[in-house]
Image (tube, rainbow, N blue to C red; front, side, top):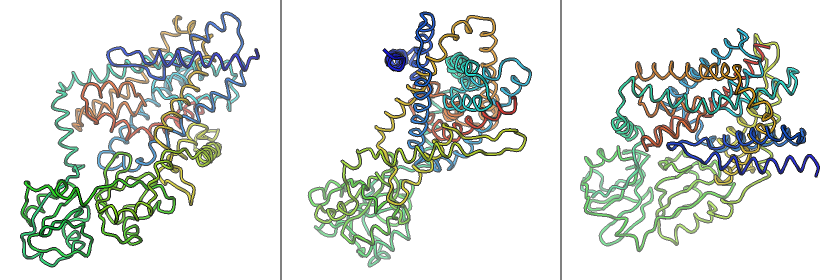
Length: 550
């Protein structure tokens, strides 16, 4: 067999054994895809012991392709909601993440400045101390551009693997320390979070009212909604014995029964104006005549059009009650622009809704199909973007986003925009999840196989103990500093705080620990709100540290 075939066989062995290793849970915590890294290290050690040589070109190609595939797919996943994360507490969360990255980078720079370790080791240790695989890829890339020998660069993979599991444990220990220090009661934190969530993101519900105010007699529905709030919709109406799907020019009459749909916080205002009738349920009463339909936007021509344009193009007796995007319900405001894959919830009679179905597309086949041409166009643009040099004052060598930052930022922009002309960058979630997992398995498997020969001798030495201790400093110092400040002085919710700190170190297992503890979405929200910015900053800072210390 050729060395290329042997390399592929070894990767397959590494992949399935690593996935199994990563699925093993200890007190509800697993290392996930990190198991592939350790499986690769073990196999790489024994391959070296028995003088089995792998093909370096194949290792390099699979490593780079895996990293690009993982990063680009991750960007497409988080991109659609990237700017919404900056709303409300999102700005504070991202400032926290910036502080964690900055403090950790300063600690790493000081360690390197006093020559506690080799530059290649520092790059790997810094990346492992924040569990950032893309940072490792970017760091190895800049080391190669600086002319450092490949055998030296491989040391970064070893120190990364050393720091990775210790980082997970240390982060969870920091969370436990903060909980003890501030005497946190998880039940109270969950209740406080749910209350704040209800205040900031009012749940959309149906509300049955009777028009008993003569001042509204003869007023059109469209004018009524402008008076109340555009975020609401009148989805059904009963007049006498007839059930009606009202449009904006339908006039109200005293005695009409309306089903209003919108944010719950607006209903107290409505209840002052109309008689609330909790005994009525127009949705059930009118079910035989009026249906609620989910219509998916799958026609490229409709992407980017505001709802007012959709309603103007297709005049029928139906009402859009809400638009669901990435699992989140949005009020049907006139200026809301449709994105590919949006689920438009429409209320109306089947015969009236059918033209709208044709208008928007509603093709499940198109929704579930993978557009490989746009996918690879975007990936190519990301690689090219990563090659552009950025000159930063004080650094002798320009910084490049590389195969980590380039595809990430490109994917974020393309997925947020949704399309470029007729090119749709929508990819089904299940496909993106598969690409992400396959990409990270490729990258970590190749890193492990390349570095296994020298990993275990390093870990068992005094040098290894020193490196682990320094890695703990890079992890713990920024987390404790920001955590104590935000909880002690800013009184931030403990669950949100831990999720944000996990995101600022891209540490998914530690976020899972908090999720299992509380069972609410506070930690995942904090994690996802800062993840894109953190990932970008880690890619840039590891290069800046390497250039500053070279």
